[in-house]
Amino acid sequence: MSAPLPYDTQQLRHTAGEIITNVRELSHAGWTPATSSNFSRRLDPRHAAITVSGRDKGRLTEDDIMVVDLDGRAVGSDHRPSAETLLHTQLYRRFPDIGCVLHTHSQVQTIASRLYAGVGRVHLEGYELLKAFAGNTTHEAAIDVPVFANTQDMPTLAAQVDALLDRQRLWGYLIDGHGLYAWGADMAEARRHLEAFEFLLGCELELRKLGCPQ
Ligand SMILES: CSCCC(=O)C(=O)COP(=O)(O)O
Ligand SMILES: [Zn+2]
Image (tube, rainbow, N blue to C red; front, side, top):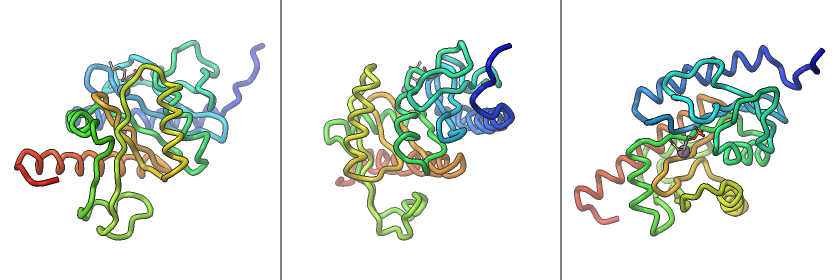
């Protein structure tokens, strides 16, 4: 007889359904082209559900969601978790109040990451929508979205993100030529943050096109 799984399988099925429904919507918006992007949800203090690597994110089924521990190792599955699993699990390890991490590759996110990689951040200020970020109660808040260099070396990138998190609380960051990571307490909050980043980055790109000073 095989050992019992160290997580709640009923909860996994429920969580998988939530990921599938939400990711399908993000995919229909064109934010997950060509199997890109990855998505996860905390299951309990030691495990997260995450998308299997390489799957078409617009057509996810339960078989495309698996469990990892917070070191990014597969638990109870022969599938390979997302190549970027460490970028998810580092957040769950560090912040017990983070329950959901969403990573997408929209055109707006990718173009913004290219344009602002040199400066290393996108400064967002003066927008009512800044109130969409947890803890911001006024449009007078300003936030900097960091832009990290792209790499296939996830431990290195995770260490850079960790170093920045030592200095400031973030709700997301860009990776140059790659896409956006955003997170929150649960799926609803993480989506709100993701959509706010997308909208605000889109505004900054439009302002640049119009020749407005930065
Ligand atoms: C074809 S996209 C390249 C990898 C990537 O950036 C991504 O978001 C998807 O990787 P995964 O292993 O999670 O499918
Ligand atoms: Zn990616």
